[in-house]
Image (cartoon, rainbow, N blue to C red; front, side, top):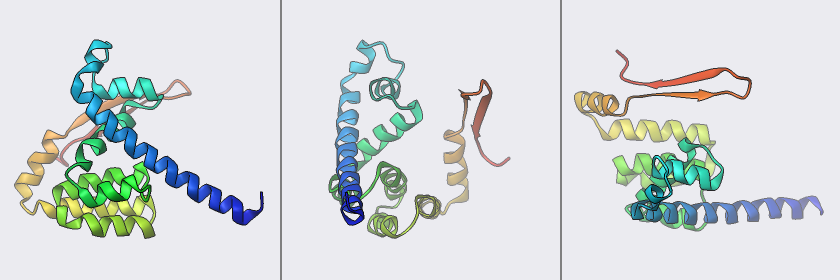
Length: 166
């Protein structure tokens, strides 16, 4: 395959995969509401989706979250359905645009011209700016605190901790 054709193939396949991931997120969010995950003995909708798709619970939870939020974010929904955004781009945009719907278009545009890391940073700044009340932001962070443990391939264990700074 000539290099220009290979580049086109990568671009077209990536767009198709992004579209399929969006459809899966929307369908998974709808399926989660049906409660079928309980009947299948899963601990949560994310656990069920992770098992069915061969991914992590964290990624499955992110997929479900995006699927739920897309219906309230029409510009993001259209861009995701068109394959313009990867799941790694859609997730932080959905989170930030839920906090500040006016930032939706700007964040989509940012995704098209920056790295995922830069996009995540901008989305974090956008979300923080949407809650100018320091006390309310502190309480929101406190509500989202967690401690997660995972096993590593080499036998080690890792912890991820989220809480307020103090």
